Image (cartoon, rainbow, N blue to C red):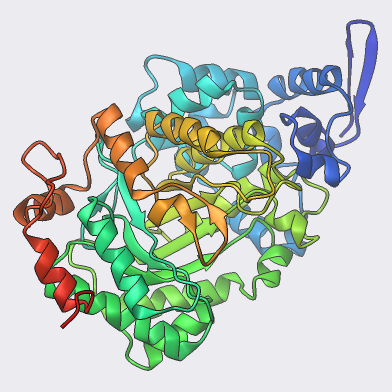
Length: 463
């Protein structure tokens, strides 16, 4: 369906919904690379005017990728909850924005409509929202998940402890785990990206983390971020898998480039559930996403990268994950050129995921060849904290020496908890105090009782 509008004496034409959404998107390098971005700020504003007047119900009829061609589209359509959508059905995209920002629209109202929202609807409304709008609405969303602790409660901020090592050296990984735990990090997950995707390495790393967690009765969960097929083989060999990880995207073709489909994810979730390792809940999946992944695989179907990212959240929502995070600046400046674009994308992703009912975190990060620096990451970290982000990354020194990118550190997490008066997951908070790592007010102790014992157990002290 084509749309036309005259703005400031100039006429603008948008041939179809994909074009309209792309032209309305705040500028980013990935859309320009794909030839989808608006040619001028005026054209972008014109597209936003048209988009604001578009009925939300239009997205249920005008599918960006045909139903018969794409299993992600089929998932979106088949899982749509018409009853939850009913209160919003008379609204346009602009009216939906107004409703989201209304004083009376609280976390209960947002949770009630979430099953009735499609990724395209939330992507569309994000395109006509300012950064402060994205922050305000996301801060009203509450998505709580459980495995061995409780993540996402109001006033809480969790951290993934990311102790990667370029050679998967166990002593180096153990040192990073100890460092993170003594900085109060690790309640979201202790998650290792292995340097090699081998079953034997995956199993060994899982046993290393499992021994630490059970020896010290740490109320958290572990994950080795190997390919889902590697994790399945590890489970077949009896490895102690808590969470199953996989990177996901917003189209069937993009997921195929990752070597996955929905059936494989269902198989992995069923296998993890059968282990019954959770003590407080059965959220066993961990997903990562990122704007530009579908475009980099030439699997974007002519759709802008932010809308494709939102479609990935439909995949995540199907499997009731414990954790989802956008690795916002990881793919590089070809997709998000500088700190301004990374900041906008991080706020969009967090907003869209939360609105769809997902437990969203964010890897606040950039590659070394992007036009960004740690000041940009400090800014985005703070904005996401205000927006109610469920968790962030904790990387030693904020520099991942295996993946070769810049993220957020254990110290950054401690800063954010202090400035926003946030605390770790309640069970983890109690553990930190019991072991003398923090005091009753959540402040780090200089000489926690656990330090010497833990270091010796992990082989970090000379005999």
